[in-house]
Amino acid sequence: MKHTRQKIATRVCIDDILGPLDCTLDPANRWNGWLSPHFTLDAARELSAQTLRLAEEDGYDSVDTIHVIDGRADSQDTVHIIEGGPSRHYDGGEDEGAEIQAVAVRIPWRALSRGATATITAATPQARKAARKRKITGRGARRAVVVHIRWQYLDEGSDTAATIVSPDHEGLFPIGGWEWTWHFASWWCACSNDLDWHETQCPCGLTRDSQPKGPLGIAGVEVGLILRADAPETTSALVDLTDLARVCAVFSGDSEIDTADDTGPFNSKTLIWAAEVLHMAMDEPAPRDVAASGWELVPDEKSTALYRITFPTAPVQ
Image (cartoon, rainbow, N blue to C red; front, side):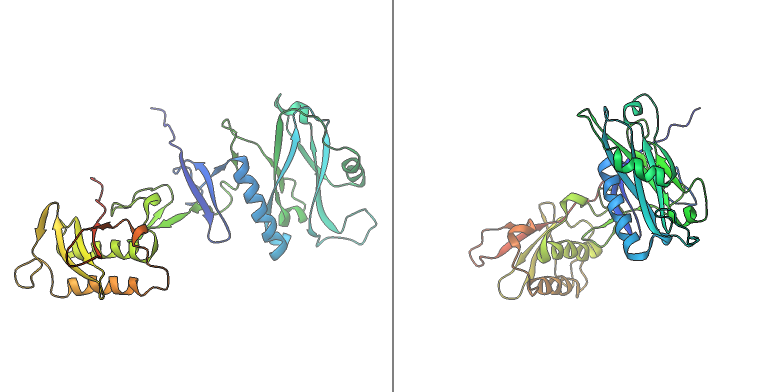
């Protein structure tokens, strides 16, 4: 049976150096455990900007760079010079720009739609002259050519150090696959779980896009974890924020759970710990965020600050 690869939409990064960037990839298509992402043109532009910043900060001899050259489908052919850092092998000759690493990219804009590709050659004086003379023209459909340059290997004379990144059948650009150490970008849930970007729901029940806002919202999640450690059936709780915050009642659905020390399921310190979490959230320098926390104000004759916290429901496995 033919294996059908399943692609997913996610985000990738390389530690805190590159990314996070939106992409599409097959999680089973790996190189030494690393991912092979395919990027939209917009994501390729952002990646280009990030690599160029790194090259300026750390030197071109230690960084690959990505370049996006824009044009038009009906433009005349053009030549573009891409320069990097100083060459370690400059011999002191008089060739124009020889002391700086550089390549020339020749783009047949009209022929791209017919399957032609751009080509990369040395940045000779003739190529530099052509780059100054021939500019992008036309008003046809926008086109873009993506170039990947590995400056360290270019300076060593490799003829594959600079390549054109051809889009796949979906128009996405595979950049750094089977070459760079791409891994999944992650997101942190308020319950402290760390998940890959495409895992949109945490086992605790919260989703990536429904994370609580502010100290009180996060405290509500923590209170739920504390209470469920003793009573997994807990679904909600009443808290009173008047003066010192405290947990007044705990519920499983519509049924109240016994909170007495000697008869209920809770450890004698559980409710104290939950109240302490609320105290610390109340002391945060951020403005009181009850309205943004998702808590429900409960009418009460004795308190104007009685709230119900409904805890997220874990998904059924």
